[in-house]
Amino acid sequence: MSGLSTMAQMAFAPRAFFLLCGIIGLTGVWSFQDATDGCCPKGWTQLDKRCFIYKEEARSFLDAESICNLLGGNLVSILSNLENEVVLEVIKLTADPVSETWIGLHQGIETDTFLWTDGSDFKFESFELMLNAGDCAEIGNNDALWNLDDCTEEHPYVCARDAKCPH
Image (tube, rainbow, N blue to C red; front, side, top):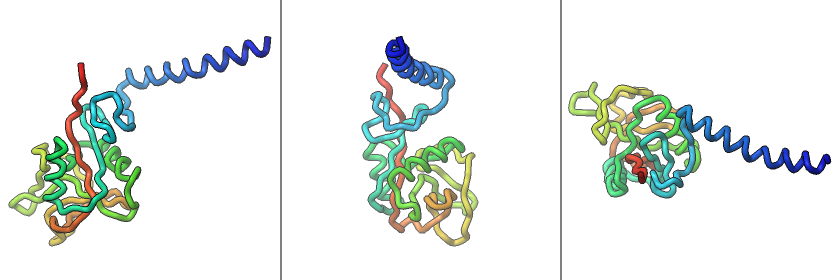
């Protein structure tokens, strides 16, 4: 009889796990995972309707933006604290913890104006403004703060694109 209860317990564990996953999915909690459901290309991470990927090869800001364009997106725009955390996790999965990574924010013609390369509104910010440091934004992997750097410097970067889910 005890063998039967052990088998019943073993059968219950996966069911409980899938039930929990279903409940989490229904409550709208984001899942941080390699996208495999067809919404994002292989190797990208999905959050809601956006896909993110870290590119390790160092490029200038403009070169990084061009590569992101070729991949169907832009350098990442970060529109909320949750997106900021996801971008940091995408970086931390593969990056050297002391390097900086380009994001898609750059200074406009006026020194107090900032723009995202994808045209998103600039509302959320998490950066230290360092005077005369540069016009393009990077995120520090060790302190998670955004800093301005010279756009010709070469850094790894994060691209973002819209998720395309088949329906």
